[in-house]
Image (cartoon, rainbow, N blue to C red; front, top):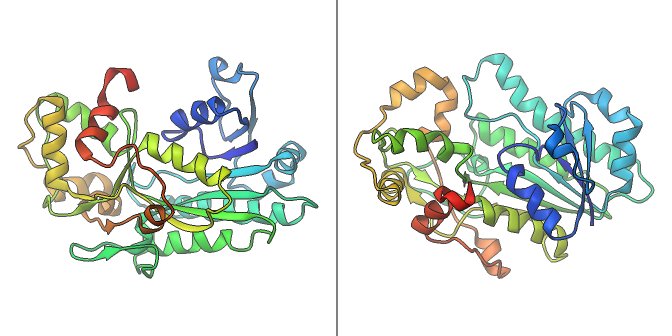
Length: 311
């Protein structure tokens, strides 16, 4: 397929791009920053440099031509949720990077005589809000905090895509990989012997190994039976305390020093909510459709994510 990839140049994209290339797809990557020369030289990849949250970008011929030529679109655009404090300005960036991008994308698709046949668009398990006791499936209603409202609006923006375009929404959990995300931040601390659970340790972590997420995106692009929302998480969520002890065991390091919640709140403000609170999410629709997870066991997922061969 000829694929247009939006927001796929970061943590997930580092594995997704070569994975899709190995499947034989042709890729156009859109990013705010020019790609390094080492990556830009691949003849199978076309690189475009646009700020997708700027509506003016969506009137530029190179971007519109790439969209018109695409058989499918993967939209993972969005500022990182847990990288910094949620000042009013950063909250607006969190919103604009998702809502403006997705709204402008589907509007541009609607203007095409032949729109792409499939749109795989990101969302997050934050859609459900947080809970220590609840268990959420795709049929569960959205929560009512900032992240839940953001995800609900993000997903709603995809629903005005042209009728000829099959829309798949992935509510992505904590993605496990060594070079980014929550695990990437935890690894140096654990390897130094100072690791431990964050906050109470009782909060749920609904996770997915990055390789399984890449396989899921590829499957959603290629398999016409995929449509609507899916929980992009492994079948067995875990508590933070178990996650920390499992990571310590995989690394052969202690994992007894808890990170106090107030310290994380001091560093990240409202953004600490992503780590201090969680939700137990089950991939009910993926299981019912027979999607095969390569990593269902947390120990195996962490071992694969931290092995030298996968860095």
